[in-house]
Image 1 (cartoon, rainbow over the protein chains, first blue to last red):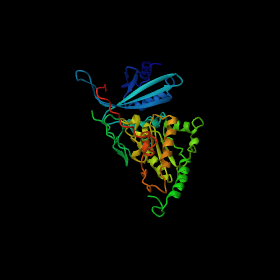
Image 2: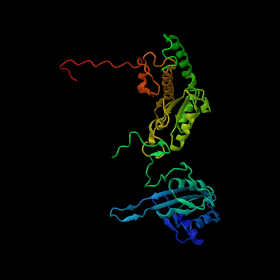
Image 3: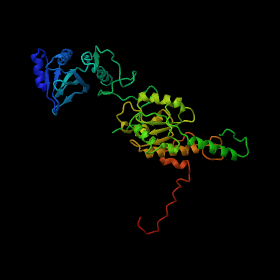
Image 4: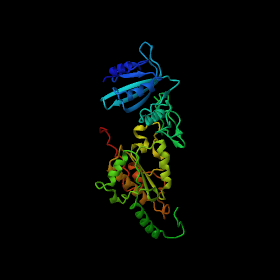
Length: 176
Length: 202
């Protein structure tokens, strides 16, 4: 099953509202509106002709504004979530994306559908700062609980110290 | 500043006792079983039969800091782990020694610039006796670091330190480049350059 066929199957089942196809340089993906995420995810897992029962990974990215050579904005700033799911029965791999606005990075949790999403969403919350509504235990998973900021954001400022541990470089970084 | 400073006219016997104490300390260094990252693989290799750290009396890896003399910090130390490393160091009994093993613990290593949570050198929070650079260091390099540390312990002279004019080495960190301060006969100073005869090509 290709991504195009999966998208057609979703449209046939009445879930095609707002779906679009992302044709990237490498892997195609289905772009799902964030209000539809839980509904589409549950259908992807439960429908017998789809049967995507294995969540491979959840990726969060912070996208900055991108302009082309003429200065026209070709990509608005925002967050992107990429879910990779696999169907063991149908031997298929699917990627679907959710785009989030920069001012409100919240999305519904899919950890009730795929339990593997629990720690993936905690890591995404920890490093990118996306809040998952309905997550059973949304805490930091890698960094300490009292860490400030989310390091994989593009505007993250490196900390000078953590508690009384000095994190600065000695001698300091050369300025270009 | 020794224990019996100026209380005895002749420190010869104290020197003999010193030699015994320092020999005992340097020959039974017990490291702590404590590996953080990939350097720990090399630390395990140096304790295994091929390189056999037991030849130098430092092969008895202890599973608790309370029985250990030497902490080999093997691996990247991030901010969360630094608190643990310092707690382990505080739990070790005196006299205690620290070896910074690998580029990450010496100065941040590959995380020097973009490691937002990596401590750039463990000497920012614990005193380090020996730095062993490498990524990771070969087992021979760890053995060399142990030998330098033993030389430092031998020069400590707990009873007669500072009594006969030799330098006090407490708190001095050694590395392969600074071994001369421990034993000046190891690397004698280079002779002054011979002036070239006039008219010859440089």
